[in-house]
Length: 77
Image 1 (cartoon, rainbow, N blue to C red):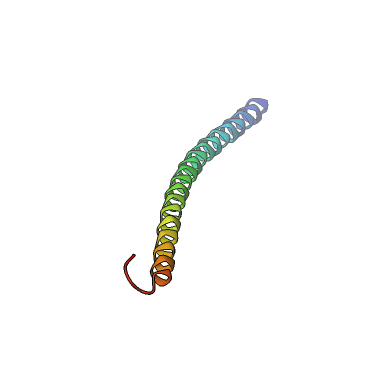
Image 2 (cartoon, rainbow, N blue to C red; image 1 turned 120 degrees about the horizontal axis):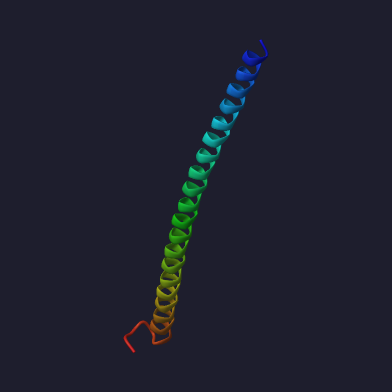
């Protein structure tokens, strides 16, 4: 009787250890997925920032050209 109880307790501990190992593996996979998501998000943000900088420079040049054009009396200077 004691042997059966001990066997069941051992089996239960083994199940708990296996479940813990499985949970740990799942969490590690999720961490790797999240790290990849962060890297992709940072890369996208960098691209968007570069685009906005270029667009701002373009818009500023365009405004300067428009101001020059108006200052010259709507003629080419």
